[in-house]
Length: 56
Image (cartoon, rainbow, N blue to C red; front, side, top):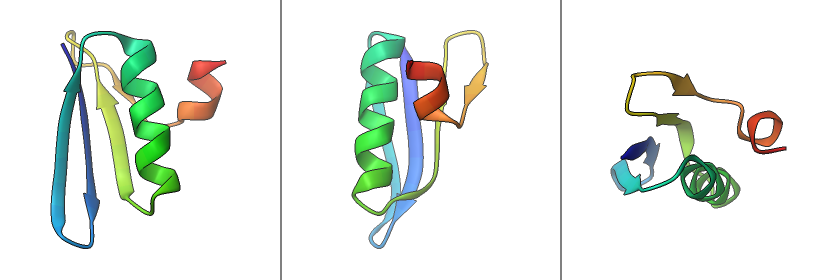
């Protein structure tokens, strides 16, 4: 399971997706919607913070 974490004006955002592609897509959407400090964490603990580069 891939975790997507970040912050918005209401507080902490924490979501999960089954695949890296789905997690990166959701992370990009959150950033576009104004969330900050968004990151994706894979099951091994690797952290993704630059979604455009890694989704290409």
